[in-house]
Image (cartoon, rainbow over all chains, first blue to last red; front, side, top):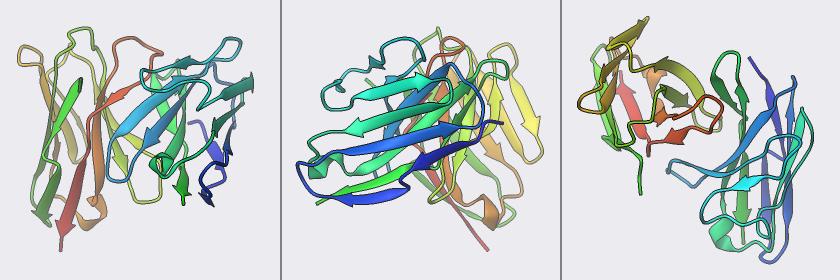
Length: 114
Length: 112
């Protein structure tokens, strides 16, 4: 199974600042996803980040607010820009193993915005 | 629009009892239905999954029942244990390689 490492694991940030979350995978994967999980809520897809193409954002999420980089097959970053308290959430990196048809998740980044 | 509806939101079961969580979907293009288990502070992990060509799949104490005509599927946890206390998410996928769509989750507490 794919092992996903996310950094930081948690952070407390000030309103108006930006935070970049890193996602490192122990194997090469084409398909990578970023989700948001608000406290006690479900997982909401932010964007799909496939290597070699621009990230595709879901309705309600825009590139200016959540820019994503995918420089290679094992790494991606998600930036939460100009943060407000409403951005307080858990951000999860996920990868898809096409051969096994399994989607794996990192442990998440717990973000609190004051 | 919520594509996968999950119930109940929370569930308390006695040790040794049966836990049942239900999900319903509308999109007939969905062809893969996994269940994920999430412990506090951890990411979701795949528990068991099913495709619409079978009506039931069992792995140990965990069973998925699938009703294609009703567009419903459920997770049954037999002989529930305190270690099963977690949040369970049903999900659906319409095409291999696309992101999973998740239900809202069920928080299960198994009392000893």
